[in-house]
Length: 32
View (cartoon, one colour):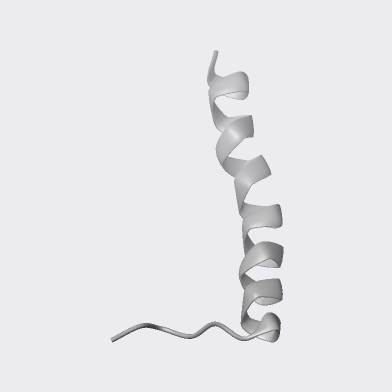
């Protein structure tokens, strides 16, 4: 079935991505 995402769930996902992505993008810079 189709998973319905509420605005609250989307905001939580976006907030999680906001603080996770910098950590992922910072790793190559620190290692390199």
